Length: 537
Image (cartoon, rainbow, N blue to C red):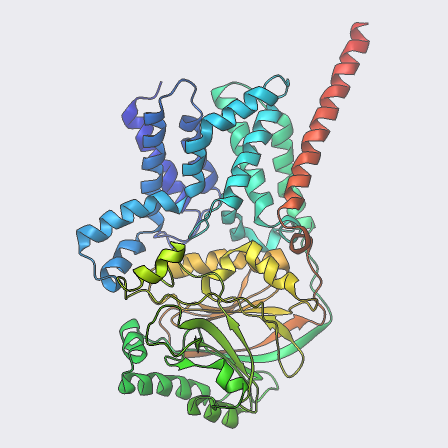
């Protein structure tokens, strides 16, 4: 039996392994480590006769190590932008450990109910695979139903091999989590109970070999869209001063953007970009889309000058004024504005998934009261329309803002809302508030949406990483952090993008596949039993 010190050290090591499957202080990711780290933890969570106290302490050490190994940027962010003392910021970070992997917390809270459910309905079945599949289904359910601020699923680390993940457009991240849990529980039960599932090992091996064979072929019929993304690298203090109305700060920011916009564009045979993009909340003043649509007001002069001199269409993040109230509570939308090459507003998108404690609070009707006590939170209004944008060359795209792109179900809903299929995703974000490796972690998870929906993602950021993510999840041209540069390229999109199976079915495809595999195993076992009886007869 492992003593308590070794137990908690192993759990802490498991948490460290989990975070190293993502961008971290190592500077690279090691995809297999989250699987190994979770196996360390689950050995103790599933240990028979163990006390609840030991299980909770095991999970606590795992979460603390995961948090400080992968999210060590949180205390620094709280110190710099939350103006919190060092000790308070680290205490707050320790508390944040409890929400970083909430699916594990919820499992431990409900473990006895899952055990009762298994004992009541499945214990009498003679195959170890029933227990393996049962707990795989439990964790798959928790991963996809428990709200998470920054999703960290067991299957996410597979994106390191993005160009080989042929099953991703069919089943998305869930199938990679499911296979990881199948393998995890097979190893765990082999070690702890001496019960082996060669069927699950075969499934995992077959899964690995099948992925490269199912990679979608590249579309031959494409359209081209010359793009310029201006990464202005605006510091946060300058940004805050401009948003408070400081004219010198606003003038300085607009000067940065104009200098980038007027630089020569020479990509292939194109002399000018068809589309110029800025990042999330680039323009510091509120703009009223209603006033622009009704021609009561004209776009900002900076926008008009850039559009006039380049002949380009223009996409930018900003604040859309919802009301003229002096109270900042839900006065504005975090928005994307799209102007044509005549400086007319074509369309606007309002962010729907707001960041708790950054753009709103998760307390419903109490938010309005709390807004008087917490002035540093923006309290944006929630958007309601899934806007589909179209360029003058009839290329369609959608614009999820910032971390909205991390949620596959939200992107599925956005893509499926319109009959016409978007040909690319424009993702405007601002990670400048966070220290490394948060921007790399954000980009890392973003790559999944490109693979799942077989769609390119054009990512425009304030301070990096501005990039093109290809449909296979690999990165095209990329601007490093804190570089004030343009990213000029020609985007190639399918003339007609078809829905992937995952876009059509979502998580249901994985549930169906797991059910079929379990039925197959049962039929195989039944056939073996009948054959054995015939031989005995």
